[in-house]
Image (cartoon, rainbow, N blue to C red; front, side):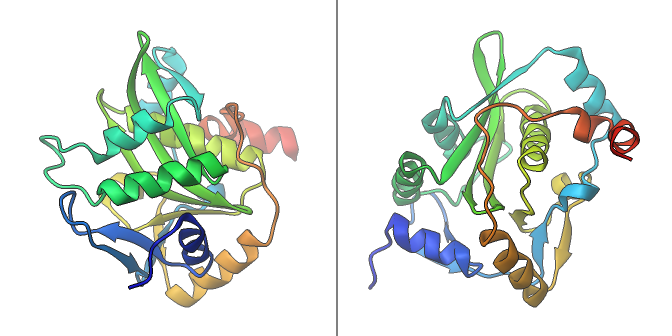
Length: 217
């Protein structure tokens, strides 16, 4: 059996497949290529009104790539709302290595100096592959997603891959597209250059899109 390495993972992402374990205790890792494929179109990203208000209140603050290991561990934790997880120990080791290589990134959401939510994913070229998120306070993972999209748009990313579709993501504009269409988007995105930011993007790009269109028209 071929040993899975960080380099192999990067090649897998480039052809449109991604790894998952059946559960936290299962050491076996399988690769998936779903059809339809979930994506979040960056230009059609929608922020619910209640979430916009929460973000503008400023109760939370956000950092980038400052607590990757904590985010990864929190995403792998079993909780009441998440009785199982696909992140096993080998996946944690592999993605930590991808982070050390500069391909994996995290966004952390803080409240009162405590990390309360976040997400992590992989970037290659102008494509970002969302992997997992967690919340210890209501809406904290959603805040991380809003900051992610603002940053991706600010830096010229073309593709935000959500892998699958669920109710949580549909409210932000996530859609499913045919595998062949996804592969075309992927090929275009990974051959472009975009650097994942180490700082927040322009939140008004996603919180106030009407204002943004007026400013750029």
